[in-house]
View 1 (cartoon, rainbow, N blue to C red):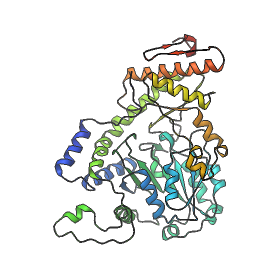
View 2 (view 1 turned 90 degrees about the vertical axis):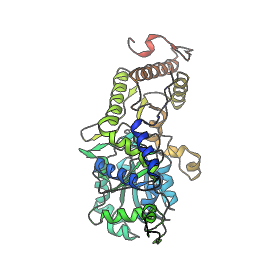
View 3 (view 1 turned 120 degrees about the vertical axis):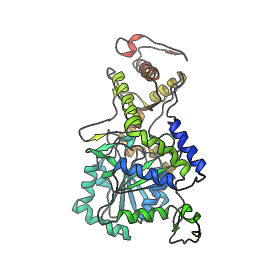
View 4 (view 1 turned 90 degrees about the horizontal axis):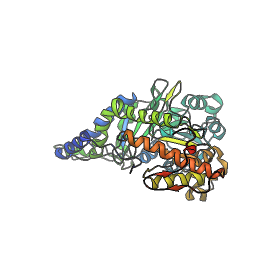
Length: 431
């Protein structure tokens, strides 16, 4: 068996969209990007959507737009991909890391404790597609004592009048919160369309604006589109029209626009997302839960509750009672069987760059606890029923080996590429 971790979904509709773009001979920012923005508007019911060339670019853009600079602080979870912190550092500000809860999300009470007069924004991360507690986060930033701490230093900060709440929604396109799109519950939500995401443009991302009524979201959309093109008042398509060559640079922007050739991939996928691709991901997650439910070591990932539902971007399995080293061995053993898995994420304080900045994993015990026993399983529409069952059986066997070794019940387990030699008892039930 050879099961990759997260291949992109490429069917004939994707190929047709890309070929159409090539045949139209317009491959940079143009009609396909606009069409993708319109589809995301429909999916999220946001007030405006701006496509960019990556999640990181989108985060840097929005922090700069808000006026975040040297001396400012932005609160983020310690448990996320490095881009969350790097976007803050690129603006000259300080990432203030706080711990998470057992759902992988930023702990609202830790956020409250970390707020100072220097705090300009909070970036809450929807790990694996599971939305953070946005009701509680919004309530915190609007409390009088917290709002009174806020010291605006830019026009946008004056207009908002409080800490900005950004959703790092890199994983969570299609997730729901209180009956509607999770993206609507923050001032700004930023999606990633990297190759491994639920919807991909190879590389790319988009910004969803849901700013309060003190802002004109349409005006901000136009401004941000210029920002993605070096502050230029015309895009390439407008300049290419007869007599449209003249342009102006209105401010110091960034060059982070999404091209049409990339948008075409995402445009084909998003049209199938709600009715086909997302339900298939959900079905796989349910099969995993059913397959592992009798294992006393199985900690199920958060998938839905009374107000939230994930978009099933990842299936972050957690194994109760194992060490980081045992987890790593399980991953190696699964690889020998042809099952590629992953870990989401290595907490940032464990990475060399952030350790050198003074962050210590000892300050974030829940982040480490979740990381040490987490294994992300393959979850994508192309998985077959046979592959899903093989993954379930392989994980049960490899976890069983480690738990037996841990309890000194067996001294040696033999792993072969084609099969696992292991007593039935390791499964924990008749298998």
